[in-house]
Length: 198
Image (tube, rainbow, N blue to C red; front, side, top):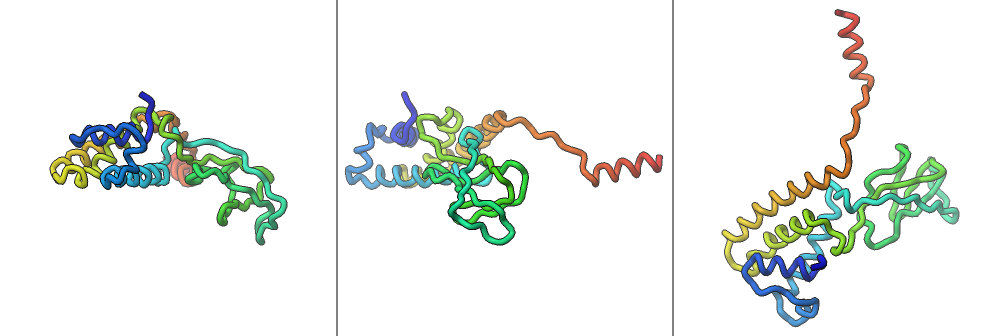
């Protein structure tokens, strides 16, 4: 079965002992629990992709378009357009490592070209299984009290949610290799003094 908003919410309902949701029309039938689950799913997904630690499967690279119609403010030579795609969530890195400043949907820099890594919100059909399960468990913990009226069940899914998110973060981090530490001035000064002093 292809992953979708409906399949995720349906799995949450099953975990919480309720009948599954069959299609999107169930969210618009006037059932407040279905409507709340749909709304909270949207909030939760937005939060997952706007957090401080980006999911690597949701990071992409783009060379930015240089704007000529906008005059950069003082101290900046060039203006670039940040992605205007509604799926754009947040900036992760600017290449090359240089100073820049963001105002609204523009980025100011002294570089002649800019390439960025940024987080986007992918369609649910592209979610890796580890992330899908993390979303299901988090949503179950978030709306469990509304559906079951049992704090014990909410506590169970809250604990499961934390464990699954840790597992998902670990798996997701394997996509990006660890950076190599470079000897800096303090490192060199420390070891140079130790070598000189025997």
